[in-house]
Length: 140
Image 1 (cartoon, rainbow, N blue to C red):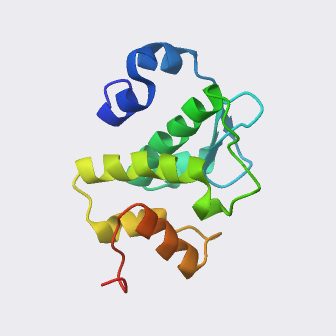
Image 2: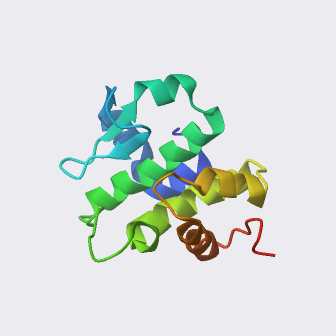
């Protein structure tokens, strides 16, 4: 990940240091991956890592690394004053993932598939996609 341009944008000159010292926890709990709001380490579900779509896993890592930097900056990753798709930390993390997806050549339709999650309503997805300047089917 240290050679990934967007990861270098996230951490700048501290990229190698942060990645070298980053704790990653592998677990059977949860369903995908996340960032601890206690100490900022990344938590990865082993089943997702083994069976998930490799592109989605890569984009999720970018997303979670943005959260790692946010945690290092003292930001509240789970600010209850915002819904998930309106939370500034989520929008920023998704922006990095979308930037990487575009660099990889993914279409807006494929990016929408990536953004879609079971905890989001269709309206939530539309709102998030709009905030990220991603065009999903039905938005045209």
